Image (cartoon, rainbow, N blue to C red; front, side, top):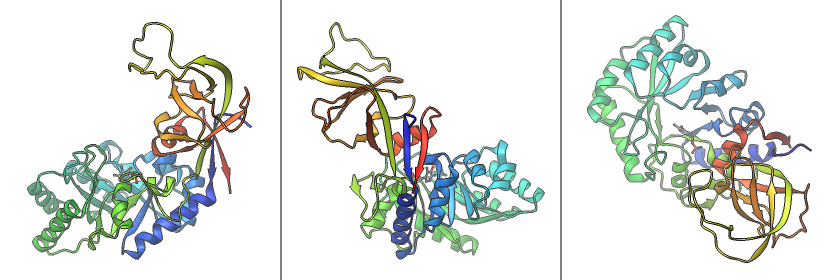
Length: 355
Ligand SMILES: *Cc1c(COP(=O)(O)O)cnc(C)c1O
C-alpha cells in the first residue's frame, strides 16, 4: 500500500446520491450532482450517475471536460470566464451567469457552434458572492437576453452561505420567488428552473421548510459526506465515510505537551496555544497542510487527538489510542468537505477505489 491515500467507496457514494435525490424529488426538486469536491473524477461521477443523478455540475471547465463522455447533462457552476465561452458552449448544456457581456459572448459561440446554450441567471440575495444585486439590473439584462440568438433563459437561481455565511431560509428564498413571478409577468414567459442554492439549502428539504416553488438544487457536499454543515447533522440513510484518508506514522516519541522556549508565530503565521497535559505519546504522520485540512478530519479512533500540522507533518497525540501504534502503522480519518477537497486535489495523495 502506498501512503497517504484516500480510499473511496463507490457503492457508498452511489447510495448517498440515491438517498439525497429521492428526498429532493419527493418535494418536487430536481438536482445537479456537483463533482468539484473530487475534481471531476470519472469513476466518482459515474457512481453518482448510477445513483440516479441526471445532471452533473462543476465550477471548473477542466473537470467537466474529464466527464464529457458520461451521457448526462453538464452544468457549469462558476460564472464563466468570457475568454472560454467557446469551451463552455462546447462542453456544457447549462451555465450559471451574472454578466451580460459574457452572456453575449456565449450567444456568439452558440451561433457559431449551431447550438442552444441554456443559462440560469444568478441573483444575489445578500450573501455577496455571485449574482445580480440590483433588482432593476435583472429586468434590464433579461430584456437583452431574450433577444439573444442561441441562448435559452432556463431560469434564475441563487447561491448562499459561500462568502457571507448567509443561511438559506424560506424568507430569503421567497424573494427569489417574487423576482421570478415579476419576470414572468413582465416578459410573458415561463421560467422552468428556480435554483435555490447548494448543500446549505438542503437543510430546508430535511426539515420540510423549502418553499414549494423552488424546484432545483446544486448539491455536492451533502452527497459526498452525508452531513448537513449548517446545523451539523448527520443525514439519515447516508454514509459519512465514502472517503477515508489513510496515513503512515513516521515517528513515535514521548514528548512534553508544551514547547520549550519563547513562542512566536508558527510556519503559517499563527501564534499557537498549548495546554500543559504533561508528557504525551505523540506520532508524526506523513501528510500535511499541502494535502489536506486538519480542521476538517476526524480520526476513526476517537482516542487519537489531532494536535496540529505543518506543510507535510501531521502531529497526533496517541497516548489514549486503542492500539499500541508504532512507526510504519496506519492511521485513518473520516474527511469532511474541505479536507476532502484538498486531499482529492493533492497529487501526493494516492486514490484507491473500492466497491
Ligand atoms: C460549489 C457550488 C455548489 C455546490 O456546493 P455544495 O455545498 O458542495 O453542495 C453549488 N452552486 C455553486 C454556484 C457552487 O459554486
